[in-house]
Length: 293
Image (cartoon, rainbow, N blue to C red; front, top):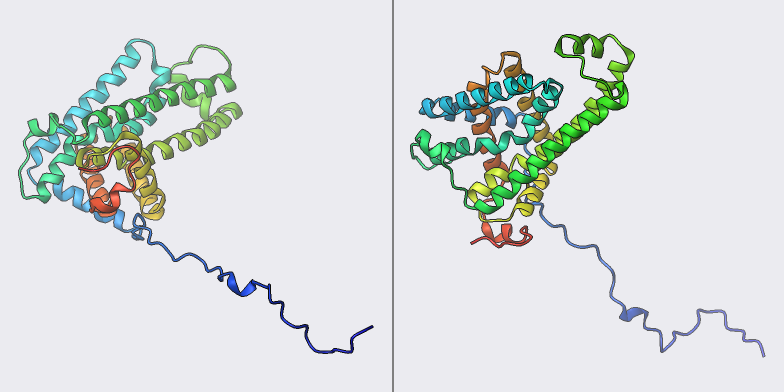
């Protein structure tokens, strides 16, 4: 028999729809790495680095002079042993290993924050808090530097074949007056930019972090990259400043490194201080292997 009921069906006594809790989105979590600093902050770091440089300037200038001498020696050795084809990759690779040799400048800036003076010997004989991890980071960056040099040789061979390097007197006309040269510049520039961006992001803060904190190498590299990624606008500006000043140093025959290298080293310390959370409680969750002491 058909029912003449026209209203809604009676509720099912076994219907447990009301027993399922409503799904709500998770609460927002504060991103402690994102400081949302404007791009102009990079100039503030540069000014702070300039102030540190000229506060007791002799140790910083001696440090820069040492970097200048090492750079000239490396270039001389490349030409002395007919390795001039590696000159441009070596110059680009300087951006990879630069933070490694700036530890003494970080020490001086840290001491200035604490109202202490720093001697040249203290800047040379630096003992990072994470000493073993510092060696590991140095090894990783050195391997990245060698990888970039090999990649540069392969790119050259792809465009010009397996033939001797034409020499510095012919390389510029070859690159800028031929279609193959321009193609090499575009492809090599793109690959070099990827290497530079990656090495900059993992090294710019990992080296001062290992100086200041007890952590492991992989955590330092990863945290450095996260700090750069979460503060991309200001770090792009800082990277552009570093690149422009380094190119200026090369154009001066590396003499500019006497002032520019200490300036950038001190400025990098202030960038690290501005972006790095200074509490160990939250920092512990970032470590992969070692908890802070």
